[in-house]
Image: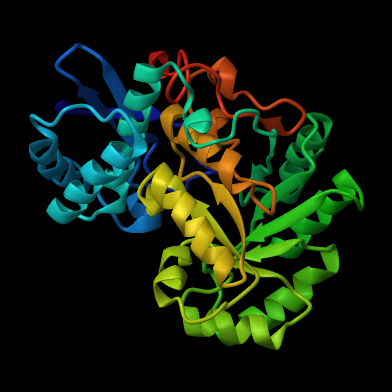
Length: 350
């Protein structure tokens, strides 16, 4: 195989209301694997330094090492050969964000050679649609209410609302009043609180009937103590999900939010979900502002994982270009794309 990586900077139309100085471009790395008979498969590396601490330069360096490993290898024809190729890349550089691109591209290759979609290769011939949450940034309460009402009108049954700001109560109150009592509302703090402030904040905001508090604090020990101290409040880990799985001794909170980039691809995400459930976690899947290949990969994995909660995969609308038809949510639901490999007509977006 010949592997080539290309850096693409994609404009953000929203970016969850970036603060002053935040980037307006989202860097993504498109990986192409080509076999000696001219077949090609594609994957995507989506490091997001503000979220996972991984720079684009670090991911590109890892992919250079993976390119050397894959050079001259025949394209895989079945999952066992895929696993061998990925294992060799892990030895060269274990960075999950780069491995995700390799794993996606290899699955795409196998699917295009066989004429099957990745979810079919994984044994999900007729996958159920995946329920999604819409996302509302840390915006003014009136704007949050308007966005919530629009999501409700579009058929979404769940919202994720960014919190960790002085006007959290006003924002959540406005959102709850806009959508009524039946819509699920998830509060995402991105670790904004600490051991002392988090219990009071969760108790104060729980009055708005919060489905789940996502990453209210950073740190496994603090999260476990918070979850134990508030048994009637559901807490999940997002940024710290991989660390929780590596810890592996016991369940620390209610749920883990898994991401194809952090898990090292489709194969890793499925394995992480299985391990999480062994420990007693519920699992759901979200995006790190992935492009269409990353979203498609997550949906193929979700067809097997069957997430326990609504998934945060309705994020392509944050970019300044049209969402591919195959990845447009309908009534708050989305299916794994049809067509061989990761899906048809996704590359035109890049």
